[in-house]
Image 1 (cartoon, rainbow, N blue to C red):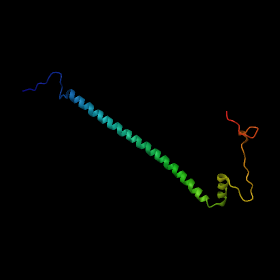
Image 2 (tube, rainbow, N blue to C red):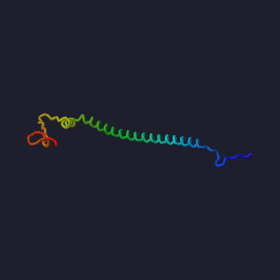
Image 3 (cartoon, rainbow, N blue to C red):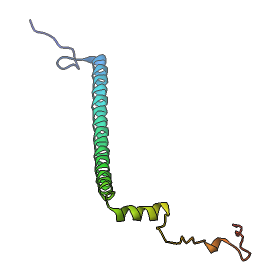
Image 4 (cartoon, helix red, strand yellow):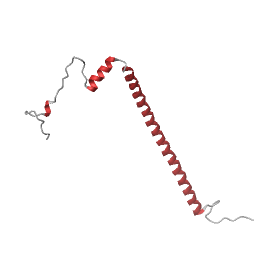
Length: 113
């Protein structure tokens, strides 16, 4: 006895429902793959930022180590005291400069326009 096939159908048919299930599964697969790629890119960007921060911190650490080594030098301490704290040495007369560009002819501050 021969098996008859319906006209218009070839092989095993999945039908409309099977096509919808296939499309939904493919959409879920594509979404998951896209999300993994997105996560991978974010992790890479964070790694790059962290490496840059490490380099900055190493440079700052080296600078601080150099400054720490300079704290034993009396000339460096004197320079810092003069430049950053406006200190003067013994037997020196302090000299203060006033910016004349902000004063008018009567010795008062000029009004800003």
